[in-house]
Image (tube, rainbow, N blue to C red; front, side, top):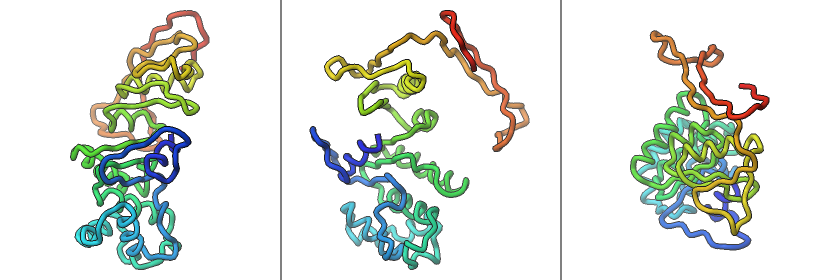
Length: 240
């Protein structure tokens, strides 16, 4: 999945076939990747933007926004090799999203920085989505896929298992994790269809968190009570 994004980004070439991207693109494959360690944060902002095809005049207009969002502040003129990984990640995210490309590639890098910064990142991603730009996201978090995606694809060992509605894609992904799914030969594959080696003996019907009326949210370490309803179709060993 990450390899596919790198091919889209142009950092790898496909061994066969073609990739076509319309519009200007920015990639969050590894936050801070692409920064030159001997250049300052300021210089890297302009370098990254020029590689992505954005003119210097455009970067001049949004430079202060990039620095403010990244919270780098006084360290913007320090060489990036002296940044912590979190500082480089925040600046990388800020550059990629403030440029507002037509296509944004995201590879499991949305959880950067502390909780407050993560909320800022998610707000920025949602705003990007509302502007009707294109995002291609690789994630092992089903909740994130359901929250952000209109369509989802499930890949296994380089083969396409399913492409279609996110909720169904998540079901396919979870089934594949338990070894119940396998990729079909290329000539038998079909869009929106997945291939079952063995039918699920258990069907999850509903899961509901029982949050007390006076509790707005759960914190890390809290006990979270919930109820799960499921159907067992045939005798099997089943542990929830």
